[in-house]
Image 1: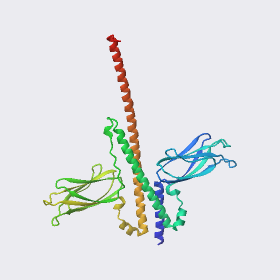
Image 2: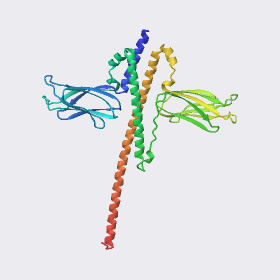
Image 3: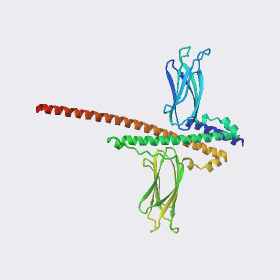
Image 4: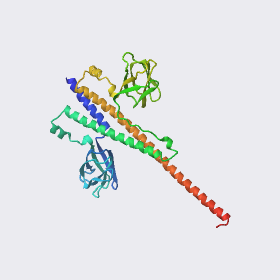
Length: 390
């Protein structure tokens, strides 16, 4: 039992450590203020998030402590905290706007040394700003239960952050398409952005046509385990038709190809990020008048892992097994979050390039119009002078 308790504690610690790497929760910042300028710290925070911060002036001369002024503003410029002639302070609020929150500090007139002033800022957001000791006392929980409660809050925060990033990704995609459509030369570069919910596993029922192929596609990241089972369901129980199955990667590589099958299985680890396609078609072995249906059980990532084998191999069960599953879920969400962030960077770069091209195109069009108008005026003036009309 000692081994199992040790594993549970290490699993919780590892999961919480991973979550702290994914979700920005708390950070201590050391800021050196110039004698006559302002220095600001910004953090991009979602809506409805608790923010708590403490700041304190660290004097070089311990006999005299300089004072500073602090101001915290929301993305729309609303003043959330302002204090002058302070050597330390604290601010706390719940965000009502999604965007960059700005905390600015500058030195007041009371600076005997005349040089720079150092400020230590302890900035906490989300679950890091929660008073877990009060929660433990109120709900009478401790130890593993308290750590699980923290882990649950962190997973909820990751989920909200994931939805926030997906929303931003969709907005940037739509903005890019609308901007690109404003010019004829850039119309060929319109992108269709598809943001899918984090995939785990799904069962699909398909009716296959007699002389055609039906395909199922899924957008999957790199280095993800995929497992699929398919079985033919026929109306005629005395005769089971056969099908052909072909699985291809985004670059057209053949991952699985079988013919004259009534059931089967495929498994692979993705080597490319993109859309993977599973295509099914009916072979010649089919009676007239009978329909052919295929049940496809498509599992991705942690849903494709054999947890029974993991439990038997590592001799874990109950809460320990659930913690291991939760740890894998957090790692998968972390990988998907990084993937979305990279897509967001790509979309932002594309949007900036498109905006730059549209701006140059507009300037060239304006210059061309001015040039053509000037030539027309010159030609008309020359024509009227030649005809002695003016």
